[in-house]
Amino acid sequence: METAVHSREIRKDNQTLHKILRSIIWILLILLTAFTLIPFVWMISSSLKLDREVFAFPLRWIPETFHWENYSLIWQKVPLVTYFKNTAFIAIVVTLLQTLTSSFAAYAFAKLNFRGRDVLFLCYIGTIAVPWQAYMLPQFIMMRSIGLYDTLWAMVVLQAFSAFGVFLMRQFYRSIPTELCEAARLDGLSEYGIWARIMLPLSKAAIATLVIFTFVNTWNDYMGPMIYLTRDINKTVQVGLRRFIQENSSDYHLIMAASLCSLLPVSVVFLCLQRYFIEGIATSGLKG
Image (cartoon, rainbow, N blue to C red; front, top):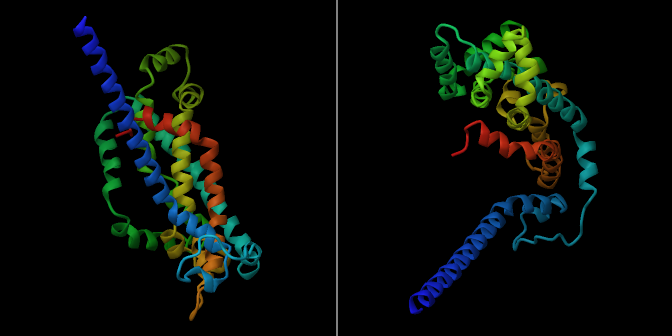
């Protein structure tokens, strides 16, 4: 009897300790989340101030007067509509092409048997480790020689293929039973048919994950458009934000307002596809 009472007390103490530890973890996570959101909150606050108030000390998180006109000024001071159109064109076309090419190549690496397949895959994936600075100059010379310099298509051609995308999709395709493909072949379906009618419908989570990665990276790309796009009519949002920086001054409040506007498309894409995102990461083998 005493042993049973003692066991219940120990179990009760363990449950209490577990609750305390869980509460501490939750508090730490909330504090960490609040800390990481500080720059974002500062950006929102700064976008509603006058320029002289952005770096005023002590810092005022809530503006004394909300200057909503900043969000209309940014469209008047620089051709932001053109920048958004250019960025949207590059991001959408690159995302579509990269998803198509990565999915197509991944199917070959995952489900087709041909000589040298694994070696070729390793060589292709190995290019991820090569820094962009190593082949930036040859790439620039190549784009200029074929007449794509200072055109939006230069950015599309450069980013239409992705070794990371192939790796992500291949990891997911490997989880699909090979017997399914073999049964389709016996039924007379071609490899293109298997890819289009079986593999693609089953890989929504992986495709959504790749779309998020590709769209966000392309939309936020700064170095590529900075190097290849020189005329104002071809610039993207990230490069166009520099127009708010003058020789002797900078409109930081307008930079913050334009930066917040540039985040909206990325947020919309993520919110639309986020329910597939975790599933895609988990099933493609990219989780830690």
